[in-house]
Length: 340
Image (tube, rainbow, N blue to C red; front, side, top):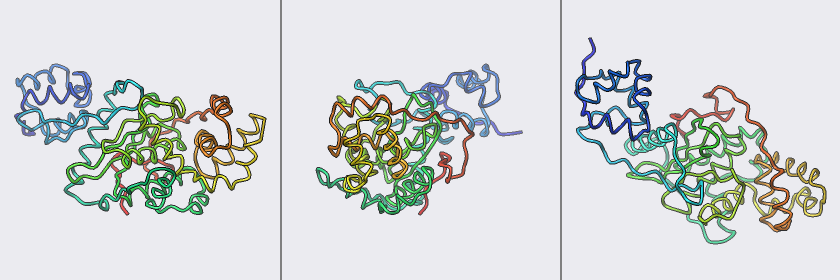
């Protein structure tokens, strides 16, 4: 018979409630009735270690945390840039994945898997993008040779790994967030989390957008940089990260040398402009939104022209498919680390 473990009832209650989980959620994950969960939390009964592990997985903490004599201090989520108020709710699933990311971060402080953190220090102005791209070690020629957006994602992810950044993915509702970043803490690596439910081209942008947060600020962020398009925000940092990410992915000098870019500057037809944007997006392995943003950023179109076309640039529908461990299809299970 499995040994029963004495667990501080206050810790079990704290872990469940702080994870936004219900008694029914705990019962489902452990295959126990609701009454048993309440008995554990009241100290009237004891779970086995296997049951404790299932609870820990549901709550996004380690089993060791549930064996503590009192509830630990859990860091607050990073700054929220998804709305001007900075107070959008975080779902139970997203909070669990955030906790798991922090747990992995602490584990990697003890087990060195990634290289030491090597985030670049960027100069002000346009030189920032060149500095970041140089640190990533990805040339434009290499970028243009990638055969698919999935390959582009994998290559950018590997480049982030060389900078000592842990990249995680998990499928969340699109409306919740596109990505988040956590700075290095207590010897653990910085973390970038990407919503695997998002379109692959959007995930490429999210990777570099979150990298920009780690470079430009010390506290990371919870981000949805393209839900409403590039926009003037009450939080200037988000706009700076959008600008830096776009310039890293679509370098100004190279873009200005493309015939499609020159044609876009004088083309009156929206339909033709969208076609040309698609061609450039396929070349750089980014979305048409990013290319249009960059076309405006380098001064090829006016503010009015940019704003007028933006609503027409829609993402393709996302095809639902099971999560895969195949990196070349763009999927990384949340526990798979980048090892270079």
